[in-house]
Amino acid sequence: MTNLLKKAYDATWGKYVFAGMYDKFLSRVEKYGLSEKRAEMLRPAYGKTVEIGTGTGLNLPHFPDTISELILTEPYPHMVTKLEEKVRDHPRRIQVTVAGAERLPFPDASIDTVAAAMILCTVPDPDVALAEIQRVLKPGGQYLFLEHVRNSDPRIAKKQDIIQKGWYLFGNECHCNRPTIETLRSSSLEIKELKEDKMPGAWEFIEAMVIGRAVRPETDAPLASVSASTGAGSDCQDPNCS
Ligand SMILES: C[S@@+](CC[C@H](N)C(=O)[O-])C[C@H]1O[C@@H](n2cnc3c(N)ncnc32)[C@H](O)[C@@H]1O
Image 1: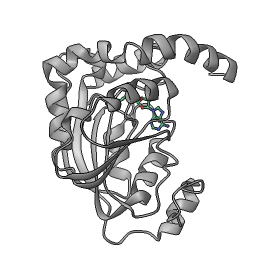
Image 2 (image 1 turned 30 degrees about the vertical axis):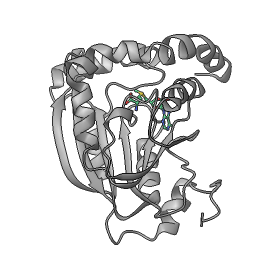
Image 3 (image 1 turned 180 degrees about the vertical axis):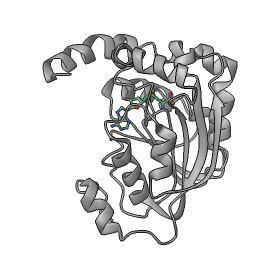
């Protein structure tokens, strides 16, 4: 999308329909069981926890008491507004930070748990997002994910490819056909659990999903090379940033 088109889109569809009605759009699948799958994804969360692409905060009720600190990040201003409304009424102390997955404002190796639901479908480059997740995780720290993915049935995957252009506009730059399982497997994170599942009550072309847990290996490529290759972390506002 050109800048001008993107601005017009954000001020209309993005604000009033995508962000404004996001919870309503998802209410059917949440009721049919996505809500339980969110809880399943988040069950292992512990320690200092960051959520990426938090959206309107549909994961909020599912963070377990084993986390010590919760920071919710989201880059899209209209989603941030919705999120802040929810956080205001929440009994837990929560920090909301405006940031995209490719440039997280946290020092290297500072986070115990990174969680994200349905963001690798939307970020411009999933490999860059995964490298950034790896950068901020402590060695042994975990990344909890829930993603809708390319269907393993070639007949449905073909339909996903056909629908993709329209879906991208409807879903604020979401891709329904990304091979996210392969992307996860080819990252430097170590996949510990990966369950292929179905989004309950969803349309066929966004039904295939995956829930899992990956960890940053205790020893991985030198951090400097990860940061240098992504350009990430350079505008970190934390005094402990390296
Ligand atoms: C399909 S929504 C998922 C929202 C929420 N995680 C959920 O489970 O309901 C995708 C989210 O990714 C956010 N997003 C878009 N670009 C992003 C980026 N570069 N980094 C992180 N999040 C991004 C969108 O603003 C949106 O909130």
